Length: 183
Image (cartoon, rainbow, N blue to C red; front, top):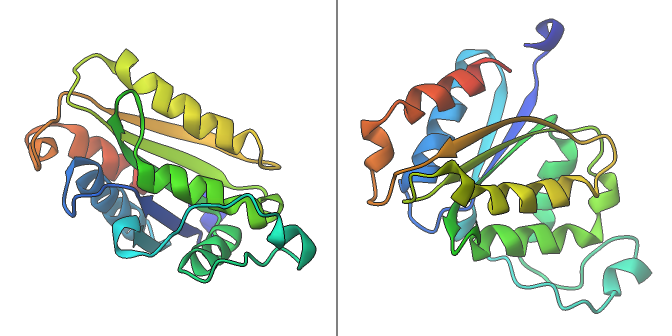
């Protein structure tokens, strides 16, 4: 804990597969953060209704409230209230998956209120070359570059994990736990 202060940690699991590799690593990060004494909320994006941004600018005319009525308003509130945000996605065609990209796009209503957050990224792919995961990490970095005071604190490159559960057979689980525990 930073100076013994309890932190609010929000884990955004973009995996379309419950207990898929990136989701398993989110669980281990969460276990480490809880063991370190932090308050943790994990959101499994597939369980949420998050519609696409329509670029209607309705949020600009009504105090940052999106006109789309779905689960994004609650998630965005959690992003604003959290101290640490973990964003996790499998890599599809050298990019983040649709669930995570849709969430990022929908932050437009209040992204200027996501201030002074520490960010961790978890990315997984069947490819064993970490270079294949870099475009996804760059996508995450592009997002946090738009946020005031955002700091990238760590990246977990989960390479060589294709089948559901492959991460369980690697030291990635330990790395995710230690990353969460180090908060």
